[in-house]
Amino acid sequence: MKKALVVLMALILALAVFAACGKQDGGNQDADTPASDDATVDVASFKTLGEALALDETGESQSATYEDCYVYVLEQNGTYWRLTAALTADQSAALWELDILDENYNEQLEALISPLAITNCENLNDQLLSEDERNALVGKTGEDLLADGWTSGYGYNLDSMEFYLEKGPFCYTVVFESEEQLENTDDFDELEAIRTLAVKSVAFNSLGNSATDLPEE
Image 1 (tube, rainbow, N blue to C red):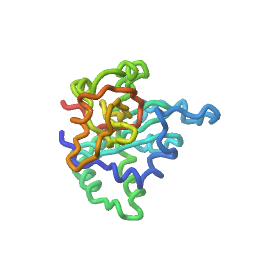
Image 2: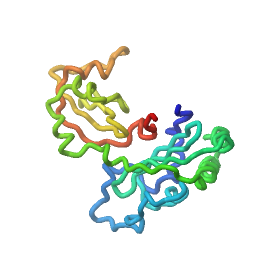
Image 3: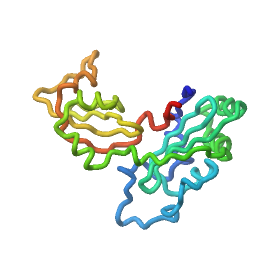
C-alpha cells in the first residue's frame, strides 16, 4: 500500500484542529498542571476520528492520506496512538481536492475526516525506547545504529554534534563524540559521518517522519 500524501506541512496550519497543546517532551505533563478530564479517556475505544480530534489535551500529531485510508497519529497523556480509518474513492478524492492555502482548510479537513470510522488503533509506546534502552546505546558506534535500522531524521547540529535520528516511528537526539569538528560541506553525508563515531547520549525528541507509515502487509 503506497502512501499517497503526507500532510506534514498541513499540521502546522491545523494545530488548532488537532492539538490544543504544543509538543511535549515524551508527553509528560508539568507536575503543577492539574490533570484534565481527558486523562482517563481510552483512545482505543474511539469509533471515529472525530472523537480523537475533539480531545482537549493532546501533544504532537501527524496525519497522512493513503490511497484507501487516512492515518492520524497523536500523543495523549504520554501515550502515542496511530489511528487508521478506511477511505472510499470519493472521500480520498475529496481530501486530494482540499487547498492547504484556503483560509477554511482546517474546517474543511475536519469535516471530511471527523466522520471516518476507525478500523485500526495501535499503541506505539511499545516501540518507544525506554531510558534503559537509550542508555545501553552509549558507547556504540554510528555503524551499530545503522545496522540496527536507525535512519536519518530531522537533520543535525554539528556544533553540538547532535544528530536527529529515527528508530521506528520516533525521532531521537543522538549526541556523538568526535575528536575533530565536522564541517557541513555541500556533499556532507550525515550517515557516513557518524559511522565511526561513538554515541555519547540518546534522548527522546519527537514523532519521526515515519510515524504515519503503515506496516507492510
